[in-house]
Amino acid sequence: MHDIYILGSGAMASLWASYLYPKQTLHFIQRTPSPDGLYRFTIEPQNKEIKGRSLSIQDIDTQIDYLILATKAYDAVDAMNSIKDKLAHNACVLLLQNGLGSQQAIAAGFPSIKLFACSSTEGAYKPNANTLIHAGKGINTIGPMNSVASPADLTGWLPKSHYEWRDDIDFVLWRKFMINCAINPLTVLYNCPNGDLIKHNDYTTHMHHLCEEIDLITKVRFPHINESAFDLAHKTCELTAKNFSSMLQDNRNGNPTEISFMTGYLIEQANTYNIPCPFNEALFNTLSQA
Ligand code: KPL
Image (cartoon, rainbow, N blue to C red; front, side, top):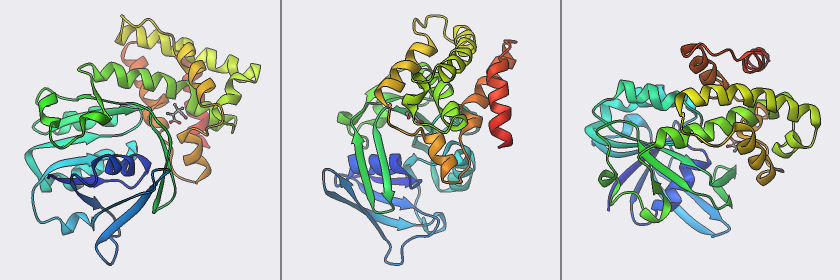
């Protein structure tokens, strides 16, 4: 049995907790820990109860060997900094953030920590703090974010049945990032579910323009890629037609969005390689001012 700390309270944090429980001892790091010191939730449709300790960062009195960092991308660096004094010098940390940029910033700041990133196609949401709905079965892909992280470091604490290992996680993350850049901001702009982007001609044309720029930048980063952003995004819109993207959900809930880790990071990459991306820039500016 391992002591696994989970920082973040969203659907992905809970989904990983459900994979680990009851084999491992779970510690949920929460801003406001429950008065009885326990956090519990039920995963549906399995109807299984998951429970673990509920504690704040200040309550942690041992060194953490295993951490799952499941915050939003914009909170990830601050979260790592706030917990760094509690981490063993060679701790294993699994990063579950959407988009790109936060994983790279953490990798730059924590060279001795064994850092792994996960890209997931699992579908899950939390209608309330104590219920997790596992809405769609997907795949978790995990790989190393730095040279001290190896697949052997995952043995024992992460269940093999719940992830696939890929050495080239950068590419896996980038492929999902292409899809997110093509879909998420447009669903906010047009205030629509994913499927509408391929139903309305003017939305689809807009997606085409974004995707042409995404492909130019992608070709520089990953010359071997044989898929286009538009094809990937189109397929995803078909498969998730009724879904509201994570960015639209954040926007509707009045929360900050992860646009800086999607379109924002894309623009940074475009600037690095001197590739113009006017459609993505215009979209970023429109949504950032909203
Ligand atoms: O990952 C997603 C998200 O909403 O963030 C997609 C693939 C767009 C599915 O909604």
